[in-house]
Length: 133
Image (cartoon, rainbow, N blue to C red):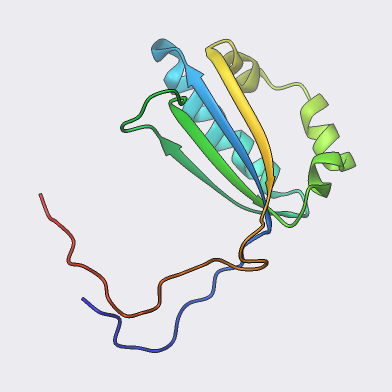
């Protein structure tokens, strides 16, 4: 249904993203999920400069890893901060357990190039009806 309002919600979007993809052994997925959701996400988002994080699990595809996390950052500076380094150095039993099951990891830091700020969005008012199953 078309959006009747001319007002659009505005979301703060960092201009840098950190993309992390991982493959996890099936028997370790529960430990991995617990670590990522209960410890890793909250810890990182305490660091100034981290804006948000979103996690995804692969539904379909080839040549990519099963788990994806997209971290939005103001810039790359949080990855060099003392707080980030302290978190990485801190012992964590739950992280150590989860890491035993991670078989592949890919990580990339990306800087936004277009548009220069915010997000390119379709505000034309046309939204096709969703297919319901």
